[in-house]
Image (cartoon, rainbow, N blue to C red; front, side):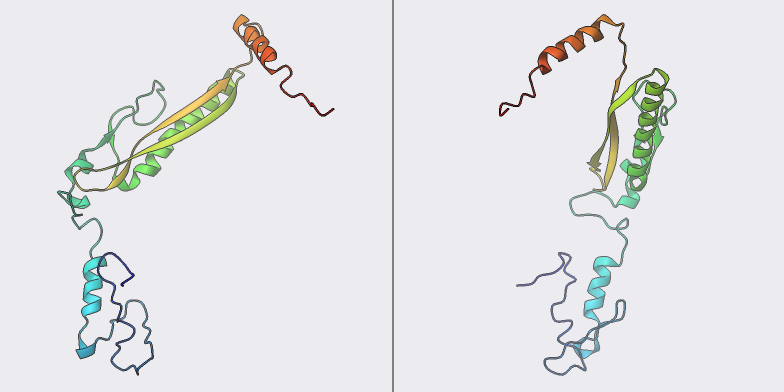
Length: 186
C-alpha cells in the first residue's frame, strides 16, 4: 500500500535506497537537493519536477480544454453591479482576474455595507443585521475556481413612534411576548 501524493511523484524508496546508506539507515536530504538513486540517476527528482515544476497556470487540467493562462473565458469575464446604489464600483462592466476576484468582490460588497451604515446614521436608524455572501464558480473551459459575485443583505430599523404601523407592530409584539418568560417554579 502506497500512501502519498496523487500526482505519482511520491517515491516510497527514496530514503531507504540511498547510494551510500548502510542497511537499516535512512538518508535524509535537504529540500531542493537532488536525490541519490541507485545507478546514479535522478529519476525521483525528474518525476517531482514534472508534477510540481510547471506552474499551475501553464498546465491543462484533466477534462478541460485549456490552461488557466490561455483561457479565453477567464480573459473575457466581466463583472457588473446590479444594485440601485450609484456610488459603488462596477456600475459599468469591468474585468477582474480570477486570482483577484475574491478580494475585489469583497471590497465591492463592503461598499454596500458602508452605504447601509451611512443611510442608517443619516435617518436616525440602526443597522440590525448585515451579511455578505460571496458566490463561487468553476470556469468550464480551464477549471479555475473564482468568485463569481456577491450578495449583501442589510436590515435597518428606524424608530418612528408617530407611524401607526409602528405603533400597531409594538402592540402586536406586546401581546405576543406577554407571559413568555414565566417562572413556574416560584
